[in-house]
Length: 186
Image (cartoon, rainbow, N blue to C red; front, side):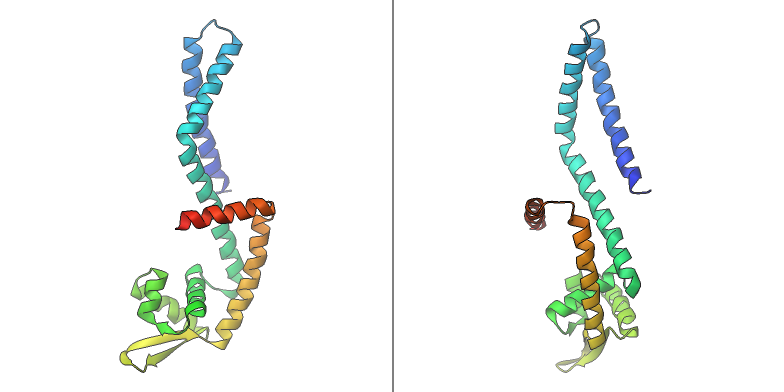
C-alpha cells in the first residue's frame, strides 16, 4: 500500500501541473473550439513531460529501488540476515580475510557499525575473528564454513528473486537496463 502512495502523489502532482497549464490554455483560447483546447493541452503535456523528465525518471528509479530493497529484505528474512550483514558476507567472500578497518572501508560504514555487524555474524558462526599476526592491535575477520554455506543459499534465493523481478523484461531490455545501470554506477 505504501508503494502506491508515491505513485498517486506523483500522479496528483503531474495532474495538477497539467490542469494549471490546461486552464491557462482554455482561458486564452475561449471560444476557439475543442480542437484548439486539445492542442493546447497536448502542448502543455509535452512541456510538462520535458520539464519533468528527470524528476519523473528519478521518481520511477527510486520506486523500483524501493521495491527491490523490500524484496531483498524478504528474501534475507529466513536466514535472519540484515542487508548490511549480507553485504559484509559478500565482501569477505570476494576479498577474503581482512582487517575490520579494511572491511569498514569497503562497506563505507563507520568502524563501530562494522563491529556491530561482525558481532552479530560471529554470534551465529558466520564469520570468525583472529589476531593479525603482523599487528597484534588489529583483528582479522573471515567467513567460516557455515558462513559460506549460508551465503550460497542466500545467493541461490536472490537469483530466483532477481529472475522474478526482471522476468517482465525481454532479454534485450534486460541487457539495455544492465548497460544503463553500469553506466550510471561509474
